[in-house]
Image (cartoon, rainbow, N blue to C red; front, side, top):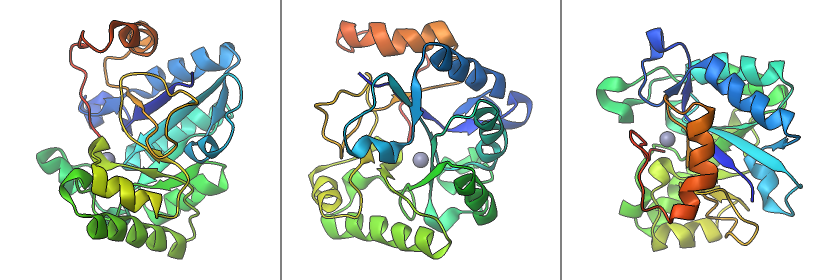
Length: 237
Ligand SMILES: [Zn+2]
């Protein structure tokens, strides 16, 4: 089994609040934990073929400015890679889909710097819609427009991440005919080699997920069949 974790913002709560945010020191405690246990950090695009033994994959949705600042700093200090998923039309703007909790998103320069430093910048759609609400052509257009825009700005996305984890049969068909061998959804368990590479589940990490709660989500909750919800857990993309 391979833990694929879904983070969003990484920043001081005094500035970023708690919504979709993890403090940098908390992210660091997670990185230390997996590194000490000999886990190899891989990017989402690395999930296309055979998985390395004892791997872990950290992913960060929306490419918030705070994440590219504080998250990259923590990850670089430990020499580990990860994937950041950018929303092509909103790079350098704000996460307006978060409504009154919108926050600044990283600029193209920041994303290129991160790619140069060994991180993957993946495709998180053009406009952050719920793919389950779109027909196949609209899904394909969202993926293709974002792919083209990322390439035009010097980025090389190798995987796709569904906004909100939202996916229906039309989206599935669009992704099967799309440019990526890997797509990520949300789930409540670690990924397994038998999983469809175009529907790899990720466990959402929230503000209050210290190590005990994170390990509960990864190792205990799946055994309970998802019948026991974790208080305050939010499924968000
Ligand atoms: Zn998102």
